[in-house]
Image 1: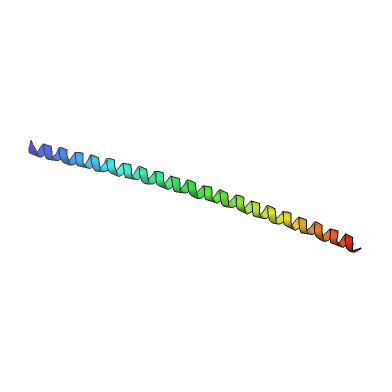
Image 2: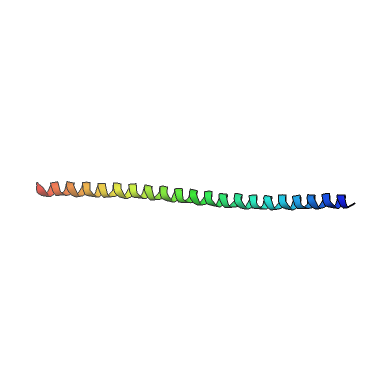
Length: 76
């Protein structure tokens, strides 16, 4: 009978270990998911910033072009 109890204890310990391992695994998975989400968000934000920079650059270029055109008009 003591042998049976021993086996039972071992299987309970193993089950507890597996459960704990599963919980840790889930937790790690959740954290990785969160990190990936953060990275994607960061990437989108960066893209928007780049688009904005290009747009502003283009606008400044157009503005300078208009100013030069007006300068030439005034010169003649």
